[in-house]
Length: 343
Image (cartoon, rainbow, N blue to C red; front, side, top):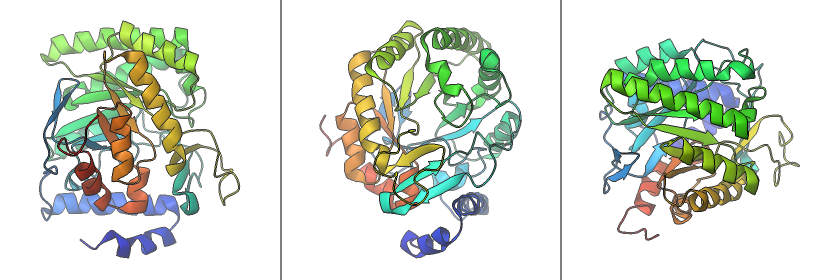
């Protein structure tokens, strides 16, 4: 495999979404070729989180492989876990193009993809075909045309269909690119949604004879009262983890850059401080009752370690891979090994 420093100029010469699609297609072909190791994570001391054993603390965040098409290719990069999706009950094209923009001077990305995916049945078929047997998270969402008052029905469909194939399931209520989705973070809406999901999880655990943890993915754009309310709901409903965070609507530090005013969620380095502050706040509010998985702005090993120092149990990568390539995984695993990291 060519070093990423040689590949990146060609990838960045393409528009961002074409580069993304080309990367997924390449990883899919490599995964099927048999030329890559079958999902061997980089060595570390296993970490038990949500009752699952993670070979290392560094995982892939949802959004890169929305349809689970490149699981085996991604597994060869050494991740301790992989999260695919967001997937919706029915296929949908997402928002109009262009909808994905790089901000190289800030090491940021703005996207307004809108949960473009092939639907949950296609994702499940891809998971069944994959050779990967490591920790696999599946991230579920609602269809764009499902009224927000009926959103729970979409999440329940998603949970039921992916349950048997996931190590854990993430409930995404924090994308800024599906109209009104973040309303589900409100007090009443969140209580109702989590109550429904927990009841369905209990039913499915009995049916399958296997407990699959539930994680909630939240936004970085939360005030102290919202964090306290969400933490309370997570504890009341015995949700298994929280993922902090999704992309931000803030344009602090990027507003004057090319594409800096594009609509959508901002990820990458510009969100690091904000998302890490939210990690700290949730760690404090949850008082150890459930783990926090950190995502947002991890561009090097030091930033991965900083997420753990903020109290996170695990760390996810996405935008950093666009700027740094596969070497980032190895660097972050090394920086967060138990013998080097002390909380």
